[in-house]
Length: 131
Image 1 (tube, rainbow, N blue to C red):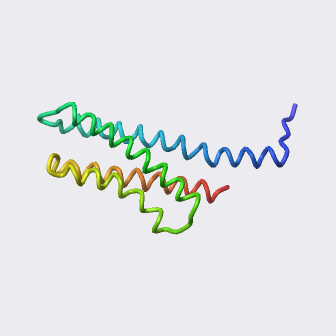
Image 2: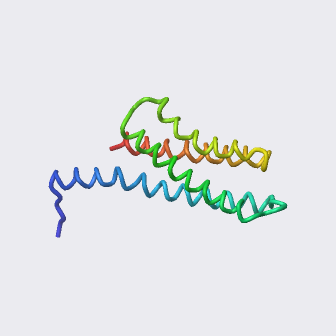
């Protein structure tokens, strides 16, 4: 038996996949970011770990999720390259505020956020150009 999809079904499937794949990729990138944060903290433990620092790390994951979500919407709605780089300011500003607590570590966290955002946007732009 052969499954035959009509043209309308194929268009609907492509439209759903264009939204679903970046959202799933967003969640995967946030999990990778969480694993990287835990790995960095396991390699170089913080001397005086507090509950507020743990909350800060989880809040940074939420900020990264919102950054990736904003990047996805900007990538889909506009083609201006300058606007695509705008959402990465959110995690950078968050870690700049904590430079006095983590002088070197904040730069590592900022770099990790920027790298994950760049990889996410490159994969999303590749997927949107492919279909």
